[in-house]
Amino acid sequence: MELRHLRYFLAIAQTENVRLAAEQLHVTQPALSRQLKDLEDELGMRLFERLPRGIHLNAAGKAYAQEVQRILADLDSAGERTRRIAAGEAGRIRLGFLEIAAWRGIMPDVISAFSTACPDIGMELIAGNTPQQLEMMLADTLDGGFIYLFNPLEDPLTGLALRRDNVVLAAPSAWGHRFAESVAARDLKGVPYIGFPRAGYPAYFDQLLSACRAAGFSPDFVQTARDEGAVLSLVSAGIGVAIVNSFNLSRPLPQVDYLPLTDISVPLPLYFVWRRRHLNPALDRFVELVAQHVAEDAGKRH
Image (tube, rainbow, N blue to C red; front, side, top):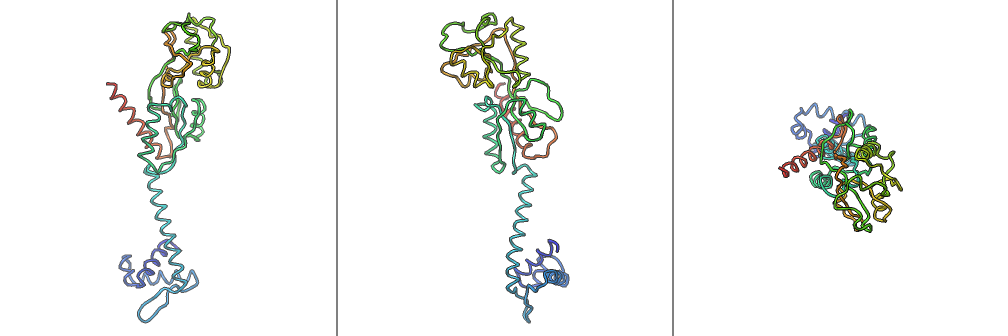
């Protein structure tokens, strides 16, 4: 049995007239009659009653017509959905993100715009740091991610630069005027310092420590925390100072002061990264939207 047998049968069932069905299907009447006989022979039953004035569906034929109509509708629906997935109009996309990148700016803007423009593409958003996201992308368990990039990307990954942040000093507000409005490395000697373990972010850790030492400052670690949110909670408790992402200025904390550093700089380039060779058309749509927002932001700055 082939798909055409079902379509031919349904055309005959809907018209109960082989001649009219043949005209609709653009086949000859004898050929259509043979196809119907082949179908009935394969099923081992008659689907129509042959009467002097034509043919009529019998009980088995009516039941079979309902099933065939459902099957063909499902096939048409599957074909349409498959076409939309291939065109990047439907499907699913798995995106990684850094917590700090989600507060405001290009990432939440793009996510919101994509949800509106492509409502039939489901998004799975997965929080993770840069090393975790890169590992997932290489394992093909993540389609793309918003990360801070400290090392050149290696094949098969590629990326699009979004913005560049830097670092600032976070100090407990309770310490009052211990520091001036801006801070130099020499001002931090002997000051309790809160950081993060190297294992979680080795490239960032190494660049930050190198910048501190180049300025003549070796951090006096009194506490470490796994992420910047936890680091800032310890700063707010008055345990020590920390050097953190300047983007934290967009989420001020009542017990933390952010101060510019005069001689310590660690560029923090935010990127959207994805696999260069992939099989997800929805990802192409998302990358197009990211690129559009980057171009719009660049236009606003000029």
